[in-house]
Image (cartoon, rainbow, N blue to C red):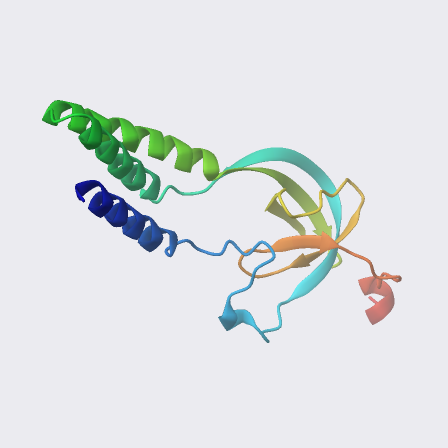
Length: 164
């Protein structure tokens, strides 16, 4: 009965903590943003380089790992030192797993917009196209700002549109 109670408590903690996860904006939108127009501008990729993006660590991994390590140690030993060591080891392993899960391959782009501005945009590679130098893109301003492929058949130059 004691094991069932511990498993129930661990499951409840995991479900509670998993509900705290956030939407990162990669192909997902918050309800508040539906119907809101975002400013977009055409651009050309000037340069790109591979980078690593490290998201923040929330501590969930340490908490879940420490809880799991403590439960496993408690089920296998009555020694408080072993249980404490299980908690510490579980917390360290949990933090390492969370850190690995929050590390993403990304690409840093330098783009030149239609208005001749130079901007730098870092975009996670997963679920996003990888752009090459001289490729036409559209920069969508917002949180997060992101690049999409420009599939327009024509490209309006500011000089010809406004006679500048």
